[in-house]
Image (cartoon, rainbow, N blue to C red):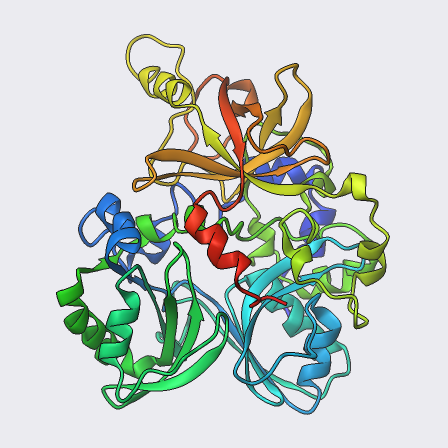
Length: 473
């Protein structure tokens, strides 16, 4: 953010003839892309063993995923903290007790998602927001400019953190043996924690906040505490977990976790248009996260708003509550059903995937390479999804391979009336005109890949877990 110094995001937009073209060709992903694994690699290796076995661990034994370095955090505290969160979030605060977390989602006045994050209510008037830089920046901006009596502390990711350390460490313990490890590693009896609820425990004398959630249909937990005690807690978990087949997970497998739970991270923030968002754009930096919104894929539009999404598109309407006056409420209440999209998983045709791999050998034509386990090559991927007769009926985004499932899948937002499970569609793979100027995109030709529309998440075990949960409401 600029806070009075340097070029602003608004100034960058004003001097950029075509914002979509800039994001498509010249913006550098702020976090992770096919070329961006190394942004966390200085702290966590791409793999401790190999990404395939590390993926299998959260399905078959147990996995320890390290989240201490790549997630930004924002702490909000003061007499108006709850009022601020209620005003900005689509979530109800009526049931937001201190021992409960929420998937906090904020929208623009036009109803477009700015971002989402996990938010803990640590005290009556103290909140911790974890991951999701655009939504963290939006809360920070409103806290500073909206007349709220609150104090904020922002903790940047390790790759840009000038202090050289974080406030908290953070681990995710997943897999069928995760509960056994958790019960064994903590001091005393294990508390019963409902889905997306929290409790405090001790691990080797360290006070640890536990968030109960799950990723592959199992009882998983997220563990956080003072950063200085990171190694103490990690060593304890790995020592106890050895008996239960625990596997530490590197960045390659970690960033593929979204294909297990169908989370669609970091949508294009709906902030780049509209006078009502000008103040925020003037507050943000021209070199910050939002200014580096990398876009890629076969779908091209000159209108940045064609890349925006609403809570309906990502399935967040299940915990969007119209019981309070939040920013974007009027637009979302009045959004016609036919303009609401549905989140689905697309299971890619194995023969067509093999054909793309085969094109890398011999004289060509060479199709866009399919990398594994992360197949999408842009942080914000938008590939055309067409019906068999050629109509554009949706957009495919994050794509990747799940070794335990043996499938390559992507997550898509499907247009109203075109989301039927079991239907066959065509994904246009590769960028037009030989590819963009993104340095990690090689020259290639486009092709089409058949896919079958499936429920999201693809895993039946995770579908059951989510149906039985109410963490985001």
